[in-house]
Image (cartoon, rainbow, N blue to C red; front, top):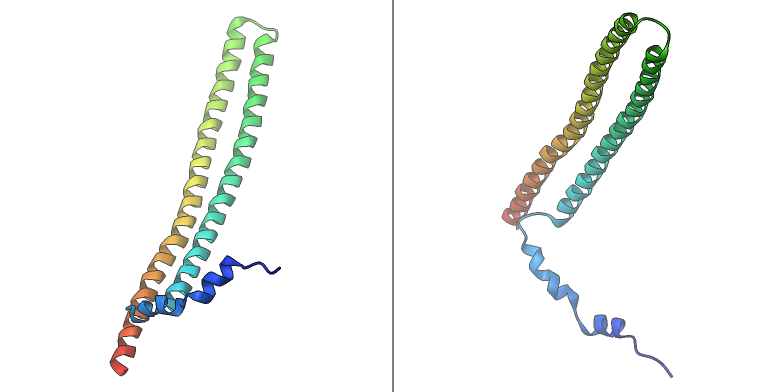
Length: 151
């Protein structure tokens, strides 16, 4: 006993070429538009890859900074618990705090620069692609107009 396949019956009973006839009169070349969209997706993927690489670099740098902070805190604790007068400890800790503070500010500036660089690289890729995409669409519309004039 043969079973009927509703999927194949649906397609055999309907002529889908008629449904797409209306798209023959579009003011642009559909293949060119699809190619443009493919390029847009490639550019977006590339921008996302740059952003991801930037985030990975930032995360690695943050991990290094955190290790450094733990070491600094350990050194402060050792100095604080060590021998000496309170004045000597305070003087050593003040110098150490100053060095740690300056290093922290430098690290924050470095992280900020890394974020900016990553964002700028990704933005450049997207901006370049948007500009190219608009030119491609404009060219496709102009080409379709020329084809209609020639016909």
